[in-house]
Each structure stands twice: as C-alpha cells, then as structure tokens.
Image (cartoon, one colour):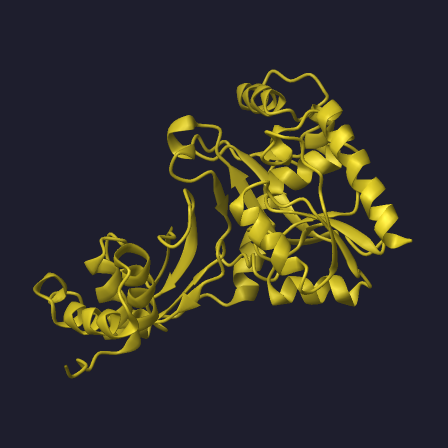
Length: 326
C-alpha cells in the first residue's frame, strides 16, 4: 500500500483526529491526556507544525507513524507491519478526509521563549504577596488556606513556597517554579473537584518541564527526588531542603545533567510507591547511586504522609542510605 503524500503535521493531525484525541486542528500546539500510560492530566504535547509529539509523563515521543504504532500495539496487540498498514488507511480514511493543516497556520509566528518567560514572570510577580499565617478577610485566601490545610500543608509552608491567589475560579492557587532559586515559570492548582478530574495543574505557556528541576539541590552529595510539586512541598514542610520534583516519573537527560553539574552523585528516590514510581527508580539506578525511600505499607506518595508517618519513613531510609555510603 503506497503512502499518501501529506506533510508530517497534517499526518499527525489526521491520526489524532481518527482516534478522537483532539477537538480541532486550528491550534498548532496542544496538550492532550496521554493514551499510553495511566494519566488523568494532559501531559502529552502535540505540535502540528512539526508533526511531533512528546509525553512529559512517560517520555514517549515520535511522529504520526510512531503514534499509530504505539496505539495499535497497546490496544490491539498487532505487529509493526499491521500497524503501518493501519497508519496508511488512516491517512486515506473518509473520517479524516476533511482534516487539513492550512498554510497560514504553518506559517503563523510562535512567540519566542524569552517573551513567554517574561509574560509568566510578570503575571506571577504582579499578583499580591500573601503572608498566609496572618489574619485575612479575603474570601479567596481563606478558602485556599482551608483547602491546603486539609491536604496537610501549613500556612507557614505556603508562605515559604511563595504561594499566591490568582482570583481565577478554576485555578485559584499559584506557585512559582523555582529551580535552585531561579524562576522558571509558574503552576496553578485547581481547588475544584469537577476540574481536578480533568486537570489538576495548569502551567504557564512555554514552561519546560523537561529542563526544570523544581526545588533545591547541590548543597549535599545526595538529593531526594519526587514526582510532583506538592510532593516536593510536603518534604520541605517536614524540614528536608535538598529535594527536587521532576514533574513526572522519569528523569530527563537535562535534569540528570543539572544534578551532575552540581556534584550530586547519589539520589534517594521518593518517586511514588506504584508501578510508574518503581520504573522511574530503576531508571535512576542506571545514572546515580540510588537508595529507595522506605514508604510504609499502604502509603502511595508523599502527599499521603503526615509528620509522624514521614518521620518513620525518613529514619528508615537514612539508616539504609548511611549504611550503603560506608
């Protein structure tokens, strides 16, 4: 079967449309829920201008052909040849016959990263500073403080994290993404259950999770590694200063490089106590000397730990770490 001649961006658009994963092709860069791993938040970046996709959660990437291969192997267990045949049929399918990428969209200018960074910087720093321990009669502040306290975070921790209020009903809490103290962007957290089912976090446009380590590192020969921002914040609340969130379960090459450049050779993996966290830990073992964080039975991630539980896990972990370091 001969391959239909379409550009890479249009081929990806047809494939995504065929699998009902995008609502339209009018926006060149989109984020969708990754179909290749257990995901509830949009973690896959789609670029219809280049015809490439990348998932920040499972680190899979590729073009339209690769996407079809991954879909067909995962959901239908077919071989590569049958997957390629399906790809060719998709390009010619009646369902995708009206899907075209216009020249105007392909030639549309994209904001440079510096401009996106400046917009994110100005937005966050333009919001009012909040001392969360202080009394307040602002409804949004009271609601956010109550919400975070129920999740186990103290007002002091929110102040330390420089959390602010956006006054956006969908994503009311905002945190700066600080990479060893340097502002890299921001992340908003929804406090609404209906929105949380679809997407918990909202990052600023242009933010690079791939190249950002959120937290502090380099002051010790080791660093705690966690998945999410709130996991990192929970460690900070319990007094751990050398901890970073990789914003996914697998550390990227850029993140590895940053740690190595700071002289970090040992990692304590506090990635989630689930299948993805275990896979992420195995990957870390190919790059660093790794000690696994000793989660108690039934504890899935740092967010589920209170101070007493954390202390037990921490003490067990550090005994193992110190024993391995002798």
